Length: 131
Image (tube, rainbow, N blue to C red):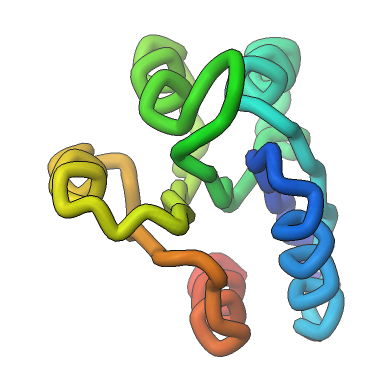
């Protein structure tokens, strides 16, 4: 059996997290889903597990607009960490602001910028690309 995918959801919107987790449960792949309500919580988790690749996420679904540490601040801090594992990061946002999209696309570690709500097919493609 394959190792479960470790998926990290970083979003302060409880309704979006709920629908995202439901959609993830529909995808028949072994997975572990961890949620954080802001970027700082997620950074702390990553720092605490930096030497354990199995605990680090394979995929991060990252909201832009959050309190304490937003998505772009998360990326800025994440880039300063020395992580050996290749983690796929997808920015999710309800923002169609061209400046946000352009800024995200200019950051090489961001795999894609996805407008919320994420389509089930897109979510499935993301998971299958890492499995």
